Amino acid sequence: MAVLFSSAPRIAIGLAPEGVAACRSVGKSLEVREHAAEPAFERDWRPALACLDELLAEGRSRGARLTVALSHSLTRFLGVPWSDELMDRRRAQHYLRAQFAAVFGEVSEQWTFAAEDAPRGQPRLACAVDDELLAALHRTAQAQGARIESIAPWLVTAFNRACEGMASDGWFAAIEPGRLALVEVRAGGARQIALQNWSGDCAPVLERSVSRTVLRTGSASGLPVLVADLTQGGGRTWLAAMAEAAT
Image (cartoon, rainbow, N blue to C red; front, side, top):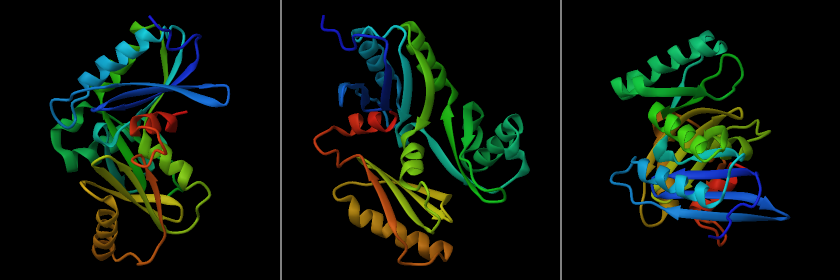
């Protein structure tokens, strides 16, 4: 059997219902491996977790430290109003749970929540991940002798990198095959988010999404749009590009 990873490296993982990719730095290049999965429905992560288990086993990843980037379809997002509850980790979970429950209902009782940093008093971009998925990720890593250091939506990582130091208003779009996330940026921070599916050419879908949001919110038109597009991987697969976002 070929050795996927020859030492105990830091491995970046990109996970989506469609499959999983793993990469690590080898000199000045990235060593990438991936497995495709066959989900039974849009948010079905179990086949991809089985692929991750196989990939780590092939790679002899014992002792490795993993950073995981999650696809849009494995994460829920919400723009939430400012609250002092966000200043305390435990109280923040209760506050975010109430915000998500108002939109998504009782299913949110089985989720774990996090909110991005933002200036005091400003709205924040929050995300939620299924508790069962989080537990399964940790079990899968531990079964192969690896340890997960972080799990985050790739959208959040891409947003932070693209908008670092951005003090102006605008838009940030994160594109996966068939999935578009549009973030309204105000004073460099995320104010709200809209997600939708797309097919064919994403460019007109993105343009219409911006236009609809401008009309709905009364935002200024003509603001810049920053784009992170996994479908334009420069020869890489989109899963590999997502894994690289976690490095």
